[in-house]
Image (cartoon, rainbow, N blue to C red; front, side):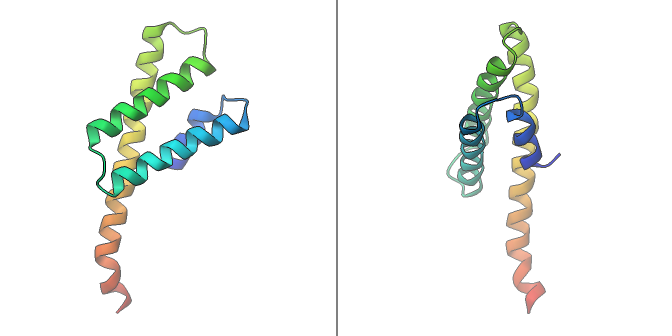
Length: 102
């Protein structure tokens, strides 16, 4: 699943459009910072995990703390993997693009 679809799936349970927008904007910002080299993978994973825990605890208040953590870890790992893949594609494309165009 692409990064955008994962983020949309994560925020789908939020009723407030402003909250959805802020979560999506924050995750995009983290992706951009990671892509520019301003953040390590561990820091990215930690921040994404915090966001996922918060969103899941709000959207599923019936879950216990351990269940929230487990779900958040799974979703955060998927989001981090998709961020890494998109960054890899962007870096590869920027290296290959000049050769393709000329």
